Image (cartoon, rainbow, N blue to C red):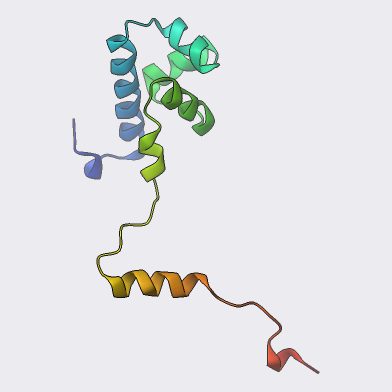
Length: 106
C-alpha cells in the first residue's frame, strides 16, 4: 500500500474502506450489524467495503459508530500557528469590516 501522499482519490477511498472493515472485524460485527448501527443500507455498506464509494454523511455515520469521529475534526483544519506573529496575522484577517465603498457613492 502506498503512503497516502502518493495515493490517488480511488486508492485513498479503498484504504479508508479497509480501515473501516478492520475496525468492524475488531468489534466482531457483521456487515449487517455495522450498517444497522450506522443507519445505512446493507447494500450501501457492502459497496463501500468493496469499492470505497460512499457519501460523506454515511461515512460520518460509520465514523461515529466506530468512535473515529476525531479524524474528521482535523480534516481541512488550519495548521497550528508556528509563532505568535502568525497567529496575530490570522486573527487580523478574520476581522475585516464590511461596508459601502466610498468610490461607489454617486
